[in-house]
Length: 177
Image (tube, rainbow, N blue to C red):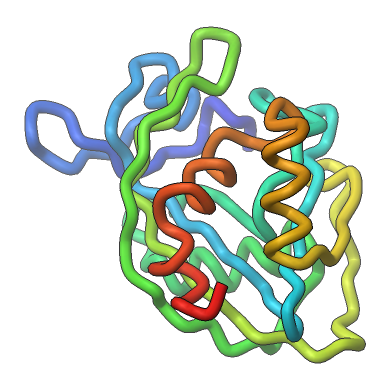
């Protein structure tokens, strides 16, 4: 299945409709998405997007971000993509609500997403098996260090990660961050 074949839930004329993923981004349609933040102590697992990604390659993002397939529940999508992207299984995902953002992601593409956000607490020895088609690299970083890096070099990070931390940090990570 190619990127063009994936049908994601997007709104057209106020109705949730299956739309090809790339078409939704080209048209800037509001669509459903899922984001996961895996946390260990004070650190967040972030990933560097693979070079082959059709937008924002090489940029650092939260642990996992994706779109549910048409008809797929958000929790099932988050669980599936954690495994497909990073080889992570067995974590307890906690829904932290929905956030919405709109951002240009390059190449004339727009992410206008209504995002179900999930957070999971991981053990220090969490095994990772990144899929090289999805992920170039991973690392654990404290929220404070991540905020500092974003302030110094924002272009190294995806627009949505910058928005999440600037506008939705308390919703996603709680008031302790």
